[in-house]
Image: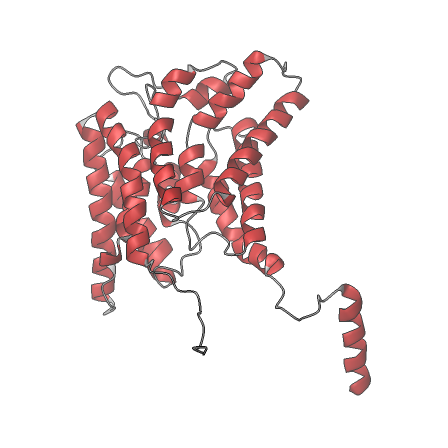
Length: 327
C-alpha cells in the first residue's frame, strides 16, 4: 500500500528561526575574539548593532501594522553581520545608522525577509563606508597598527601568516581571526545550514584570479608568491564573506549550477577589486553586485522539467514560424 499525498514529499524540520539561530551561534567565535582583541568598544558596537536591527524591524512592523517577525532571529543576524564588518574604532552611533539603512531601506521597504534584493548587512556597511569613509577605514587601536594585512599586501609586502590566522592584527571586529571564522564555518557545514558550493567556488576563484593577475603583471612565481596568496586567502573579509554573507539564502541562487556561477562571478569581482581597485578590500561590493545578478543567473540556470525538450534556438525559431503560419 502506498500513501499518496501532495508535494512536498521530502520534508525538513529546519525553519527560518532554527537556521538564523545557527548562523548567530556560528558568528559567536569570531565576534567573541573581536571583543577579546579590541576590548569594550567592540562589545558596545556589537550590542548596539544587534539591538538596533531588532528594534528598527519591530518598530517598522508596528507602525505599518504588520506581524512582528523579530523572533525569527533574522534581524539579529543582520545586526551581528553588520558588526562583523565594523572597525573597532567606529563611533557607537554608526551601527544605528547602518542598521536603519539595512533594515528599513533594504529589507522592510522591499517586503521583509525573503524579498530583499541584496544582503542588508552588507548594504549597511556600504552605506557607512560611503558616508563615513575615514571612520570606516580607521583601524588604529591600542597596540595595533592602522595598516591592515590587505593594505600591507597591496603595498607589495608580505604578512605574518601566524598573526593573520590567529588574529593578532588590525582589521574589522569579526574579520581578524581566520581560525575563529573557520570554527563558525565548520559549525554551519556540520549543521547543514550552508553547503560548500558557493564558499569553495568563491574562495578558489578569488585566489586563482589574483594569481593570474599577478603572474600577468610579471610578479615572480616562487615561495614568496605562495606565501602572498595564502595571505590574501586568510586576510580581510574573504573567509567570513564566503561562509556568512555569500551563502545568504535570500540573495544567493537556489539552483545548483547558479550557485557555482555566482561563486565564480563574485570571486572574479573580489580579485579585481583587491588587485586593480583603489581599496585593498572588495568582498562587500563584490557580493552586493553578485546579489543584483542573482535573478539573471537563476533564469539562465533553471533546470529543465523532466520530460520536456530543451528549447534550442532552432526549436524556438520553428515554433515561431508555426505560430505565424497559424495566424
